[in-house]
Length: 262
Image (tube, rainbow, N blue to C red):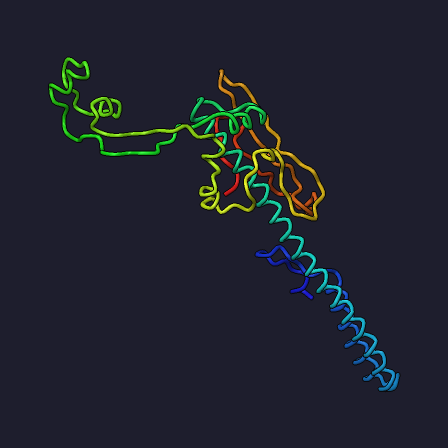
């Protein structure tokens, strides 16, 4: 009974009340049987009949307990799956926001703005590279060709390109195609394929009919836009009292797009 009433810290499971009832039934069975046999108040036949009744009842409660524990395991697995689906959606938003910040030095202030960026904007991607930047000092002639009064100690990519010492070809690729190409999606070990038209949708398990979308909040601090993006609990079949964490990106107190989970 003591073991049954305790919690398993690793799985967050406890035996149900049915387990306790079954244990109490078996305890009463043993006590009553022993008492009447010692007192010789009733026959052994009646004692055997009562024993069968108590045993049957105890097994019934133990069966109900097994079913309850099994249901709890399924429940926890579905909650975890729903949480992972929510995290995947936040990771996609995070990836786009970071790309937006690299280009514009700020985060998008709305999902509409972020989706337009993913669909219509482009990123310069290196498609061909030949040669390395010279490790030597620039010669006087090279410096004059580049318009410098004195040769530079360190080469820049722009200078090396002008003199034809290296080759760098760039192409402009749609943001979403670059960040979420088939090759990139394979590397990301995704739970579901990326769909820009469902960027704001908080995915969940199939048997969960709740319709949820991520929430974006913004705050302007000293001309810098702070952005926080949150998922909506509970996750899947999760009960409100089981919610211990709300998964988020960024924050309103600093410019960041870090996640709040490990």
